[in-house]
Each structure stands twice: as structure tokens, then as C-alpha cells.
Length: 420
Image 1 (cartoon, rainbow, N blue to C red):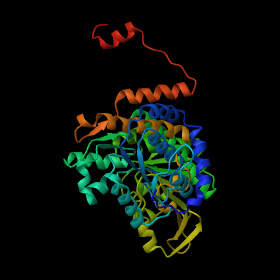
Image 2 (image 1 turned 60 degrees about the horizontal axis):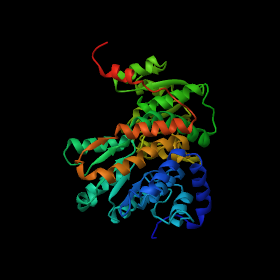
Image 3 (image 1 turned 180 degrees about the vertical axis):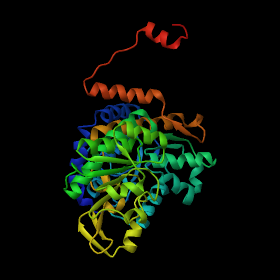
Image 4 (image 1 turned 90 degrees about the vertical axis):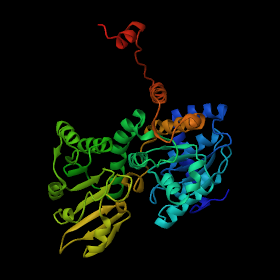
């Protein structure tokens, strides 16, 4: 297999990581057994761009077990783990080598080139995280619009881009909105982001959260999770929002709500999780405390204006791995984690395996849905079918040893009737 990885000899440690998550992903294990019997992707090439760490690697092997020819890259220059990429490229006794194009710390040009390498294989199905594969088709590989059967999008930022394409009438093929499936966003975005963000922050800074003022920019499902975990760790939490309904939610959840211009004056730790650009900019840096720490948990590195800091700070210093210090005046420093990229993946291992087991179960089953149903699908963004969501939820409960009630026939009839 042709691949572009940092060092193929790193594969043994990558294999250990993949084996560990496999042991903690019972839903994907069950789906893998089904796929091995059914071979729903036989003869199909699947192009995947997702944060390339161990959980993603195991998803790739589950799809491969279903007959897919896997072509793999990462979805962020700092989230690829080189040993995991090497393990996929090398293969093992059970799983064949894959085409892998991914390097930790690659340049923007190398990152785009790897997206193009995936698309050069003319994939039939795309699995995207942030929309870079679809954008690559639109911008540089337009001939693929007529041959790709469809795809799945993992995250909020990518769904925003797909909705914009659909509204403009240019979405080139059917896409599944995996992000908004209940078994994805209610757990991955909230509990996964909440835990993994502070895992990344703690690993990087080795500083306490308790007693600090933590400013969370954005109160969507990811922001809710970050705010909840910050509160649990003992922080005073301030939320910034542009949506009045979400701002009320934050207040009623017990948090202080301020505009960023005011929050910037009081925050010790800032976490942006909006999916938008220019959330923290020069005007906010100007009034921050000495020692303020800034990080981002949105998909792209556009929420904190790190470029302005690099161009205008009086001094820039690498304080320790993944911490850049910027001196703004005589004795006032602010610190940026992981270059303003996804702190939970650039400075950590991402979401817990049990959480990604649910998200990637949705991904795997949605990809199978595309493979089986593409002929009747239009060039639209589709919600994940309810039966897929419910299957994943029931299998998750079973893996936890939890049973729930079921409606009696009389109860079910009552809920469908207008009579009481």
C-alpha cells in the first residue's frame, strides 16, 4: 500500500492503542461481526478524514471488515497520532494494510495534499469530520461529484458547511448528518467534549481549575459539556453567547452570562467552542489578566486570533510543549494552548472510547445506509434514521447491563390517539 506516514516503525505502539480501545468499544465490536457476515461495502472505496487516533483507527478496521477499501487521512494537522497512522498503514494479522496519508504537525499545504491523495482514489463513500473532503471535491476534484454515492459528516462545523451548500443548491451528493443524531450530539458533544477538553488542558498546563474563572464561549451541546465539567472541577463559570435562548439556558443552569468584552477582564481560563471565527480578538487580549490561558475546542483554529498575537506581541516564547506565551506589554503575558487548535485532540487523546463507540456506531451504520440506499437518495443533507439511533441506544444500554421498560400495546395506542 502506498502511504504517507511519519515512521512506519512506530506501528507496535499504535497497535497497542487500537487494541485498548477495541476492548472498550462493544458497539463497534458487534457491528464488526455483522459487517463481516454482510459485507455491505464489498467493492466500494471509502475515503475517511477524521481525527486520526486509536478510536478512529478501529472504526476504519470495522469498515474494512465490511469489505471497504479504506483510504484514510486526518482532519486536523495536530490531531493525528503517528503511531496509530503507522499501524493502519502496516496492518496486522487480522486487518490488511490501508492507504494512509497523515502526519502529525503537517503544514497546511501537506494537509491539503493528503486530502487530495484520498480523493485521488476516487472514493465511493466519504466519511468527513469538518467538511474538508467534500470541500476538496467542490474546489479541486469536481469530476467526483458524479461518482460519489454519498457520505457522512461527523461534526457541527462540517454540518454548517453542508447546510450552506444545500441552501445554495450545490450539495453534490447525499450526506448523512451524523452530528445531529441523538446518540452522537447528546453524548459526544456534551460528555465527550466536556471531559476531553479538561483532559487536554490538565495534561498541558498541570494547573488547577478549582478557584479559577473559566470563560466558555458558546453554549451549544459542546459548550454545555465544557461548562458542566468546569463547574464540577470547582471553577466559577462565565458563558458568552450570541443566541438569547442559549444565554437564558446558561443562566438557569447556574452560570454567569457576559459579553466577551466583559468576560475578557475577569477570565483566568478561556475555552472557545462556537464553531465561528474571531471569538477572541485584539480588543479582548487588550484587557485580559496577566497569565490568562486561552484554548479552543471548536473544529477550526479561527476562534482565537492567534495570528494577531504572533504579529503584534512584544515577545513570543515556547513555555513548554503545546503552550505559547505572548507578552503584550511590559509585564503581562497570555498563553495559548495547542496553537489555538482543538485542545482535546492536539493536547490529548480526544473523547473517551465509550463515547466514541456510540458516535462511530452511528457513523458505521450511516455509511452502510448510504451504501444500501444511495439510489433513492437525493442531493440533500439527511437526518440519521430513527431506527439507527434507537439501535445504538439499545445496544449501549445492553453493554452497560441496563434494562428499561417497554410500552404495552394499550400504552402505545393511547399515545397515538386523540382520545383520553
